[in-house]
Length: 319
Picture 1: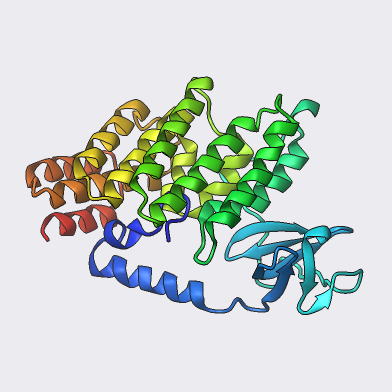
Picture 2: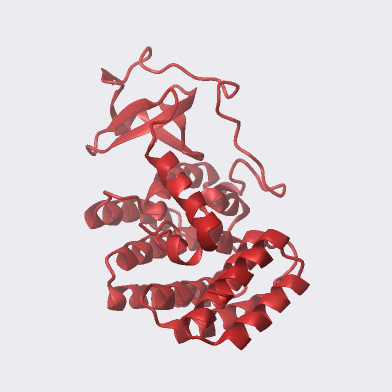
């Protein structure tokens, strides 16, 4: 599968040799193992999720889904561990019992912030509901992604003046793009890149909101692009399109442009820099352009990326 910018590519491009593939196998194994103290939540949509409940409110539960904070309202839930939702059907598990409280990265807010017109609380609720579809998990159908997107877009229609509208529109296209890549649908995925370009043109120089960045940045290495300006998102998506369909020159041209536009501005996560260099080096290596791959490796080293990363990339070049 290809979670938020494409988990499927991590085996080929994020493996970093035998050590990276062992890590990937471990991640897959852990992802398939039952969660400790898991609670089975059956939603009214018919979908069942295994989560660890961390908080119970009057009309909702908060839960941990493999490190991703989720929130479900009782009107969405059919049963919890086989019991109808009611006052006694949910027991809160404190964070001290294996689930840490949500982290605040780089001073980013745990709660959405905004004025009355932004409807921050409603956005937070809708974003948390939509996050599993940004991940595009196995077993999620096109219809389920479309239904979730339609509900998420309802926020933009109901509150067009909200500062979060740009985030909603972009994330809906990203989820559809990820699903299209999973189906190997070249034409549809390319159209969705164009859709993101159009959205970015309406918000020149805009960034994703701090709340959005704080929630999505933990979804994987490629998700670090959430910290880049929105205008760079389509370029990044195009690089993955080239990667999935083995159009190496598209990947190279897109990543070089992404790198040039971004200038690796201060404050970017090192994981984003590593992702760009890793995929560029791998693409050049796939095209047998060893001199360009080596030049990029030297550039990455000069930027102070970790010794482990440099050594891993050196191994890629030598393959």
